[in-house]
Length: 246
Length: 316
Image 1: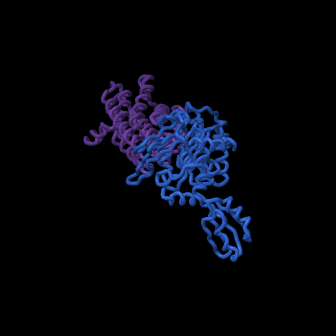
Image 2: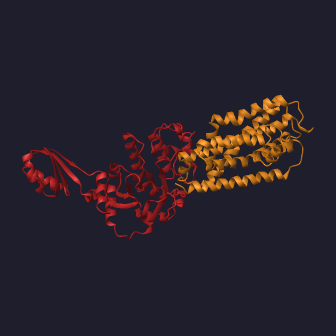
Image 3: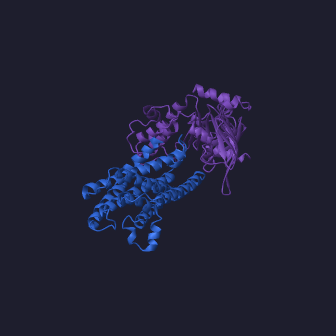
């Protein structure tokens, strides 16, 4: 399984789209937004715009890292026959799926950490305690798991020509409605209600609460686990259906 | 060569079905698969013993790929049973005892040959080192090459490497040389021959009769999902009965030809004569002993199309 994990990571790191969209774009947006809106209030005395945006843009990058490492690649592998070829090797399909998931989540790491470093060194963001950095990284990392499962579900359900486009559209919608581009509090109430159900919002929300010194909210975790279960079931449904077709 | 001849004999001797399960590599029983209303494989029964090299021959659409897919557990049969070394296909693959090379087994893009080989070698079943595998598959000097930048022949060699990485006892190949030029095809069979010289079992689907003839100890011909013939190439040619003798002869001398031993049919076009015979040796001897003044003698064996047409039209 680790040997397959290594292949998936190598393949993603060599794809310039990963570097540009999952790593460089969030850093660029962070610098832009933090500079434009840096002086404004976040509605909480405890947390600066620069720090809140750091969480948003970390999640924004992490999301694309996990989505691009799963959906389009799985769809492509199915079409070219690599998925089929792997069924002829002594490795279980479940293990390759787990390896894909771990690889995708691992690829979110650089996206998160590099936005954090940019925030610290370019915008002087600080957190109250050093341990909060580690917990923040862990929370955003865990929060990207449901998104990775969404990518896997898309990869098994649709073809490679449309998988990239569908995922990119979902990515933008999840980011915008999930409050990663602008605070969810300034949206109309209907949009807010939808946004607060999204995994993108809930993952970032764990981060915002942590750096804002608020207690952990179990509903964030519950909603994320709920999405993870839903996306896993969809992925398993399509993966097993593909396995039985020609 | 000696080994292969002995294998053929053993097969011919053991027509009685007294073999124990220990020597059976592959067994299909009543294997059936439909796609929509089309019956791709129709109650197929076949037993392949360990050490046999079997060519699965047939025209496109005969059901070769469907049969191979069921053998490998990629497709579930509608009815019937497949067993590989007494196990299910899935179990045989997980244990590394069967390896396969598909017609369109795509390979992961974006990585190098060496990296892909490291992956298959890390699977617990592989006994080889990377250098051994590279040598066996003829991939020398290509390890740093990207998988998505290979020629058709190189890709096939890489697929071959993946197929043999776990040192399987049974090797299954679906049209292995379809994308290769003549030289690549030749090299491929050379690698193949050295891998299988240790008594391993091979089943390969092809539509090249020459490959079946050069490599297989047994040929199974399928048509519309059913077995229409099963035997050595020589046996099948004999059964097809369609060997022909071609030569040129003076038109006045041609009258006596139909009386020659073994001749079933005489065709004439000016000087050009074609004799169809059931017994090529007898006919040629008779022709040499006759008074016919022939020149440019040529003996032709039936090709796959001829054999196939003969077998199918024999009411099977």
